[in-house]
Structure formats: C-alpha cells, structure tokens
Length: 89
Image (cartoon, rainbow, N blue to C red; front, top):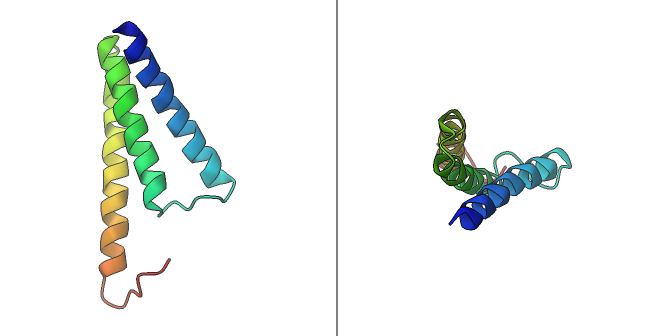
C-alpha cells in the first residue's frame, strides 16, 4: 500500500509543478479548466499521500489548495455566463 500512496503523492506533486510551469510559460491560462483540474487532482493525490503518512498540516494545505481550484473553476464558469459576457476569454 505504501508504494501506491507514495506514487499518488509523486503524481500529485508532478501535476502541481507541470501545471504551474505551463502557466508561467504561457502555454496555459489561469482561467482554463485544465489548469484548475490539474491543481484539483494534484491536491487530491497529495492529500491521499499525506493523510496516509499522517502529515496533517500538509493534508490541510493541500485540501485548501483543492478547494481553491474548485472555486476557480466555478468562478470562471459563472463569469462566462454573466450578462454581457461573450463567453470568450
């Protein structure tokens, strides 16, 4: 089981780093769903790993990170539907 939990943590960390690198490189935009999803899945995977390892401060931080990603997706979706918005960013 430890192998799978460690693998989840490494995959989550990789998702964080790759999504941020693609954002900084201009390949992804901060309002793109894939950016938020990479952060959300990264947070879930790192939370699983840190919960398994009983590293609860990290569980807390990554849980908040995931909630911010969900908020970002909802905010972007609602702003596209707002009156006067053409749905294109």
